[in-house]
Structures are given as structure tokens and as C-alpha cells.
Length: 246
Image 1 (spheres, one colour):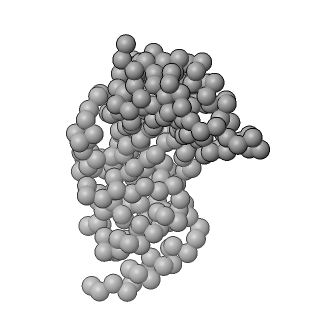
Image 2: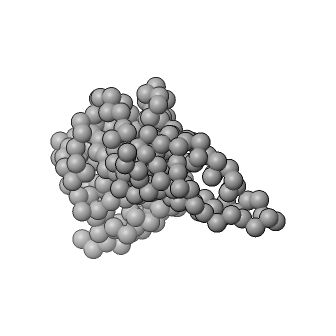
């Protein structure tokens, strides 16, 4: 039976606890430096070997999240694709973030989820996974891709919908990327970082009241920001527009 090499790293933890946890799940050849007697909790690093069934048990243990690395293990084979039956499986390179922009101004986004986190938290319960998607506001995801480390969900939203997603706090285990223009991306969860991005692209803004720029992505985001933000962004942008040459 093939065994995979693995390691467990914890910035702070109990050496005996993690060693016992690995042994309970079927790991063998567990090696690591035992702590000095006066320290019960400290940096822990262990190496081990495990069969595919033992690896699965280890990865499903909630206490192993963000602590386990398995060398050359086909993690994606542990994924139950029925959880994503309403999404089309694609390769990451196949996603076109600007596909719908000229038609109805929807902009592409993707959210990355650590595959180990998914396995430990969601893989055993489709209902729990669906609830997590709804709560994270990514229910509109249309596509999915997977590699050995990351699950990616893809979707499209209008500028107002995208703005709402941009400015809401995200779960630390969901890492969103929003495509604001084909060669550019914007990753943000705050008004401050959104404003920084918009100010950096003033050449795209032109005159806010000009109809010929109605399809400008940055302009639409600015209008959403002006509509919802009570800061001085309105005055600053009006000054910028008035100072631009005709």
C-alpha cells in the first residue's frame, strides 16, 4: 500500500496532542522534536507517512486545518463533485472576466478556497456547503475549477452588485478576486482600498456627467462609491473633473 509523506506545522500547540491525533488517524513513522519539560505549548513540527485512507481521515479533522501538507497527494480526488452539480467545471485559464460586460455590464470574479479547508469543513455536508455559499453571497457562481490546493468558483455581477461584494467583510478563508478590466484585477474589502484603486486610475474617469463614458468601469464604481459613501470623495472627484483639460 502506497504511503504519502506528510508534515504538520503549528505556530503554537501541544506536541503530544498533535502526535496522538496523527497516530489515531493511522499515520506512521511520526517524527518530531519533543518540547522541553517547562514548555507545554510551543511551535510544533512533525513529519509522518500515511496511506490514502489515513490521509483522508487526517484532512477531515477540523484541528488539522492550515497545519497539514501532504507531498504529491491527489487531494482533488477527495472532492465530491455532486456538491457542484449546478456549475460547469472549467480550467482557470478558460474564464473570461469580460464576457458579459458589453452586453449587460456584468464583471467577472472568482473566489479561491483552500481545498484542505473545504475538505475539513464542508465536504461531508452538502447542505452546509450550500449555506456557506449563500452566506458568502457567491450563490451566483456559474463555474468551478480545482487543482491540488485550491477550489475556485467563478461568476459575474453588475457594477452595483460587485460594489456591494467589494465593500463587505469576507470570511478569512474566502479570497475574492474581482476583475475590473481584462488586464487588471482588484482585490479589496474596504472603501479605503477601493478609493486608492480608483484614484490611481483617474485617466479613466474623465467627466462624471459625460454620457459617452457610461460604459467606463471605473466611472460606474465611482458613482456607486459616491452614492454610498459620506466621505470627501465627492468633493475631491469634482475638483479633479473641473481641473481636467477639455
